[in-house]
Amino acid sequence: MIKAAFKDIAALCREHGLRMTAPRRIIMQVLGESDDHPDVVELHRRVSAIDPGIALATVYRTVNMLQDKGVLERHTFSDGRARYETADRQHHDHLIDVESGDVIEFRSEEIERLQEEIARRHGYAIVSHRLEIYVKPLEARRKAGKARSKT
Image (cartoon, rainbow, N blue to C red; front, side, top):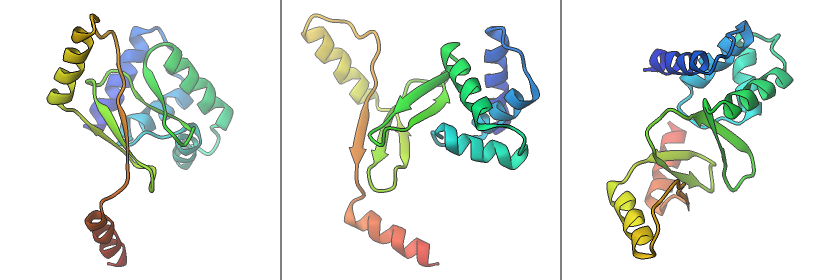
């Protein structure tokens, strides 16, 4: 799956006529391997582990270019950091853990249906939407997390 994600990003870049330089290839590889929504600083940390010669400015330029070309999608959750994910994925929504900052992707046909129904009831058709639900762990989940961290 990870290799497939990288191939998808590389294919999107080719479709948009973007040159595949060595730094871009590494940045895209790291993005393809990401199962979270890294910000540029975290992305640079991961990229630097592979090639310490890639500058933070290169990562910023590459991410901005990929976003401008529609290859990456930018999210700015309540922490104010711009985070990125590939734009070619199926529509999904996000739960954002306000304690840990974790972003959990989910898809709910019921929510999608309700949104369509609400828009139609008001005389509209949805063109685009983004759902972000800010959450905190239930006490049972919090206790389970603490127990796991002690092992």
